[in-house]
Length: 250
Ligand code: MN
Image 1 (cartoon, helix red, strand yellow):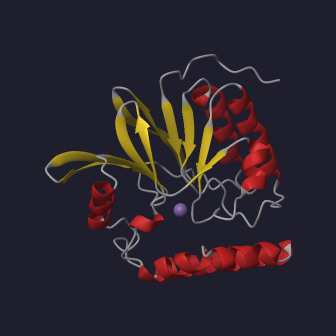
Image 2: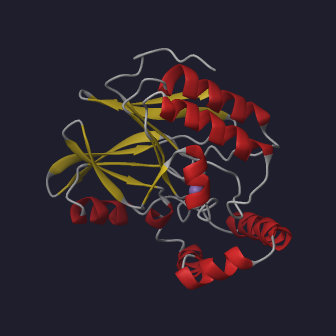
C-alpha cells in the first residue's frame, strides 16, 4: 500500500494532458506516477484532458504502462481524489472497461465545470485547430459511432497496425503544414467561450503551454494551455484565487 501525503492538494484542482504514455518512454511514466503521489494526492480533483496514452487501440490495449497507470490512478481515486478523463485524438478509443478498471470518470469534449465559482470550459483542443480542415474531416469520420463500433470489432493486431499507420500518416502530414494551421484558431476559441458563456478555457493538444488573455464581448478572458510530457512535463493548477501553469524539464 502506497501512502499518500494527506491534504497537501486540498482546495486545488489539477489539469494535465498530452502525457503520451507508452512503454517506450518510461521516464515520463515515472514522472507522472510521482506527480500523482506528490502533487495530485489530496487534491479536489484531477482532470486528464486527453492523450494520456501515446496510442490506444481499444480497452484490450496490453502495454504494461496501461496496467500500471490504472493501478496508480485507482490508488489516487481510492484516497479521495476523483479523476476525470476526456478523450484526446490519440486515445479516443478508451472506453468504459478501462475507465472502470482505473476508476476514472469519462467526460465529454467540451465539458463546462464550475471551478471554485468561475465557469470554466475544458477541451482537448484538437477541435479548436479549425484551420486544419483535413484533420477535422478525418476526426469527424473516425468518431462516428458506427465506425468506432466497427473498429472495436477488428483483431487487436490489425488495430495496432492501423494505429501505427495513422501516426506515421499524421507525422508526414504535419511536416507539410504550417505552425499556424496546427495551432488553435483564435476566432474559434472566442466563439466557443461565447457559446458556452465562460471566460476561462483550459485545453491541451497543441503542446504550446501558455497562459493567453483575450477579450470576448468586452470581457477579459483566459486561455490556459497545459504542457505535453515529451521533453518537459507539468500541469495547470487552480484554486479559488485563480490558475497557475507549472512546467518542468522531464
Ligand atoms: Mn492531442
